[in-house]
Length: 155
Image (cartoon, rainbow, N blue to C red; front, side, top):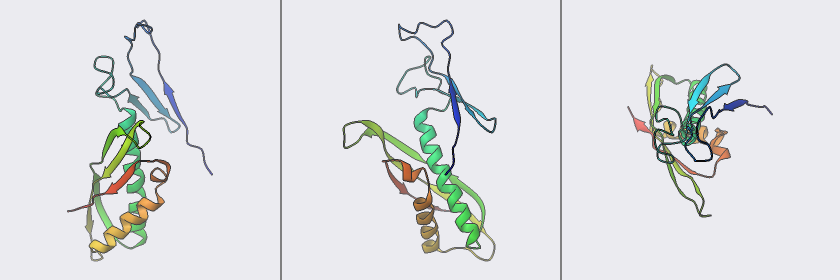
């Protein structure tokens, strides 16, 4: 099918590694040139060893899921003749114990608010159908074990 590359880069510098006093901040480098600062979540490793301004892996998973869903939603809406002016998703992932007793992202709630314009606007049933199609097509949703819900908001 296709490959998707990311480089994760960290270095210790002069920090005390074996004493567990090292920064968890690192960089994610993507093949298109984007660099994103990553870190452990401050809820997992307290500051200053975590960087709260950086993206933690849990947030990245939630963002990847939300982004994937949005991209399919936009594509299906365009094919359906609907014009979208804006899309905002305030997605939330919950870290907890799964049925195996392992810590994992157990649920993700996507909360998209979509603003449509033009003469051809979908009704609530059509919007629900677009979200269902997007969820079924989303590669990330198809790759994770977490329960994903769509809580679409009308704007």
